[in-house]
View (cartoon, rainbow, N blue to C red):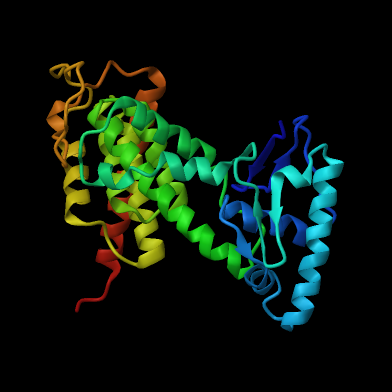
Length: 314
């Protein structure tokens, strides 16, 4: 049985029956396989493929170029130990992956695992297997679709998958917080901010996670990061909810004994009360982090005060 594994997230790569990487003679032959893999078993019109891959070329010339790249693609598959007649379905007008062929495509697996996103966003019940599938899906996303390719046919798909990734990470962040899995929630939050550092509600979520798990210094640092990115990118201050969360952390007595949070998962309110935090006795490194965070905050206050004193009277 033929076996082909097509990875479109991050660096494009294809593994053949022997798990060896296939070599493609041209960028267009790789792009051609990517185009038909994105459609899975739905065959594409050759005229459509020619227009996507050679948008500026006359139709006849684009068709000839497509025929050449189809031949090169078939050669690459054959050289990689695969039978192109079993993997591709071609006709005079269409081209696509053969229905029923043993072909795994990462974007297809990603789509299947994230099909229930709307259910999560509506806060409808979902079992643990669905959540685990969602976690595996975001693990497949090793990078944006076909990194390094900036042609229009790719950019449209890239933005669609990136938006779906953000939605999946948002769901996983919320679910892990509801389950009190703080470390996993922090990982998902950080990944969201790596994509879009302006997601202020994610900064707030990370502040809460860090504080509840006992790392007050990290929570304060997260607020400073939020302030900096909003100031540098948008020229604005954090929203009232974010400032209120910061003030609550600053006012709390560091590492004071608190009631232990329940071990059973429960639904958390949209704004997690900081009084429910469970700081553990800090390590020496955490004590240093806390002191540095407070010094940094105090220094910013002093700088603000200095600017106010130096400013001419209005």
